[in-house]
Length: 117
Image (cartoon, rainbow, N blue to C red; front, side, top):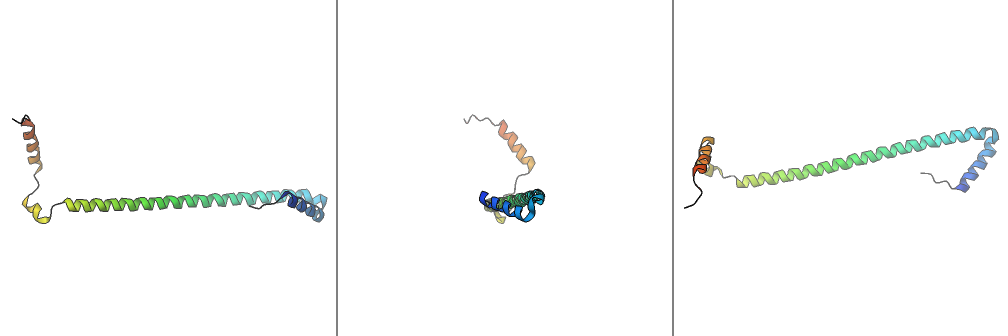
């Protein structure tokens, strides 16, 4: 913030003593200290708010990147599924089996011995 060396502080105290006099100097010093405390507190508050906003922006940026990666993965998955699905003509020739037929196939497979003779 403000850098004041010890020499400058002594010079400032001497000027204040000459200008204000010994009667008003203690009150002026208290007022200056309170003012500096308020300025420092305000500065710290602004600094903390800026840091919070930067963190929020970083989180938003990471969320946008994650959403973009998810969309790219979804697009890749959709493309893979589109390539794996049969074309319109092939699906008309070989209709999907009904659930009842699938259950019957599983039951028949269980009854068939797996000895392989």
